[in-house]
Length: 109
Image 1 (tube, rainbow, N blue to C red):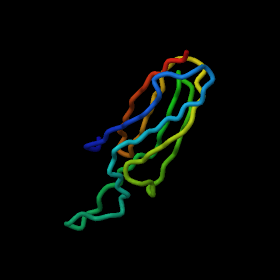
Image 2: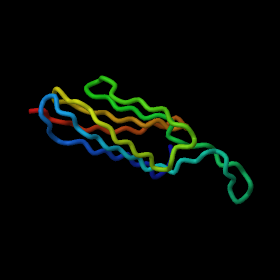
Image 3: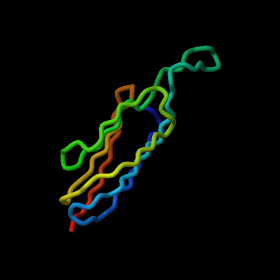
Image 4: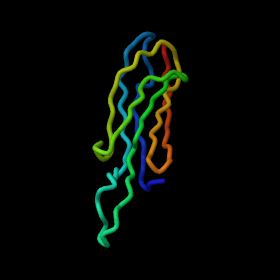
């Protein structure tokens, strides 16, 4: 597991039924391409977030595959229509097998 990895998400606490809400996500991650060398000339192993998913009440909303050219601390912003109260689950997958996740609830009135 990479050190200092911190997922952050911003989801409105409430929404009207059928409303489109904007969701913002960011994960703090150094992202190493696997092409650089350390001071001793050894290749630094690749370590990138290679996939990001977001599900709402178990239904997939976003599924993104990422490649080595992705920037450090990847940020995603997207819209989702909410028809009922529920929970968004956000998951980031790292090359080293680590999985980072967080969730946020939204109440629909």
